[in-house]
Every structure is written in C-alpha cells, then in structure tokens.
Length: 281
View 1 (cartoon, rainbow, N blue to C red):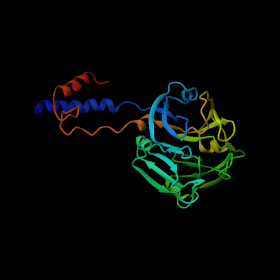
View 2 (cartoon, rainbow, N blue to C red):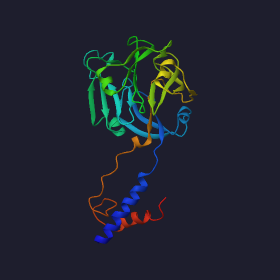
View 3 (tube, rainbow, N blue to C red):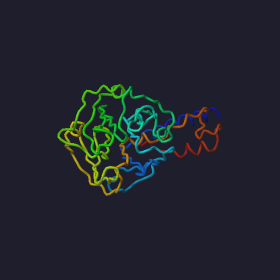
C-alpha cells in the first residue's frame, strides 16, 4: 500500500501540474441591469458584451447590491463603495469594503472596511483602477442632483484614495459626461459607457475604449463599440482575468494518494490516476 500510495501521490503532482497550466483569459462582466443588482453575466469579449452574445451566468449576488453602490476591482481584490448611514447619508457613500474574492463580494462576506476619513462620494459615482499601472480615478459631479460628471480625482494607489490625497483634482479637458456613464479599467485599458436618454432613465448605446487615463481625461478614445445590449445606464461593468472568478482550490489531501479526498486510497483514486495517464502535453 505504501508503494501504491507513493506512486499515486507522484502522479497526482503531475496531473495537478496539467490543471495548473490552463491559461486564464480576459472576460467582461456586467450586472443583470436591474436594481438592486442580483447577478452577473460574463462575456468573452467587449464586442460580445456589446451585442449581448455568448453570455454565461457568472454568479448570484445575495444579498443584492443597491445601484447607488459602485463596484470595482484592482486586479487582485474586489471592492464595493457603500454607506454606513452616518452623516449625510442622503447624498454620500462613505465606506470602501475590500473583498478577498469574487464570491466574497457576491455574498458580502470576509470584507475589510475602510472609512473615507471624513469625506464621501456622491451616490453612483465611480472608482476606476487600472490593474497594470495602479492609477485610480474617482469621478465627481457638481452636486448630488447634477446630471453630468464634470471631472475626476486621480490617485497613485489605494492608500491615497482612502486618505483622499489626490495628485490631481479637477475637470475633464473641455468636456462633461452624462452622469449615468459608467467607467472601469483593466490591464492598461480604460472603458466608459455612452448613454442616451434622461438622467436616471438612460440606455447604454456604446462603449469607448481608451489607452490611458490621460485619454479618458481628454476623451480621446482608441475605439468605440456600439452597443445593442439595450442595457440601462445603471448597469455595472468589470473586466477581469477569468482566474479571479474561480473558487479557491480545495485543500490538498491529508493522506498521500487520496486523490478524491474521501479519506481512503482505493479504486476511485486509481480511476483518477488512470484518467490522467499518457504523454505530457
């Protein structure tokens, strides 16, 4: 049995290596569009998302997240911006909650709370983090009832965001943007939805793609993709590496050779071993 167990354990490492080499891919996420947000849909590309093709369920949000709470990611963690109903709770979100995983965000578990140190964000405004450069933008309006987004605060990292010590604070370059436009970024690309209709009742008509935060500031898109999604302007969007959506791997078996984790080295484990038999790719 010891010899068999050792052989099984060795092949388990090899087979595990095969699984670990699967390439992750960039995917585009959108909420269900309804408010509050109750689920996610994933698409393999921005074009697929814009045309509402090749969509797959990507997770249920329970408890649901209200539309006033923005959602973003830095490529490692997921974040939610919300309020603890202290102070000007009628107009402002005043807390960041950082989650270790996509599942934690969707279940509101294992979150670490960061108060905004005496300031707040108008409801529905966005935080945008580029996972490649680490640069962060926080969009801003004139006041809570404003129909346009006039500019942004820019930060080098999350600590500066929490402390509200931006290296830039001001308007966009010679432009304003409809308040219902949503911003997000990932891996060096920045995105902004285009909308039509009255504030609070808009529809997404397209997505601008930018190559830098400076291009966002100057509204100099590298590409514009028209949207046939018919999505409300309140919908939230994210771009992530597909590996960020996977549940954490199960713990290794406590008994060498116990490949299925049932506490016994037996025929089921041999079946797993033989299923991985063959030449290495």
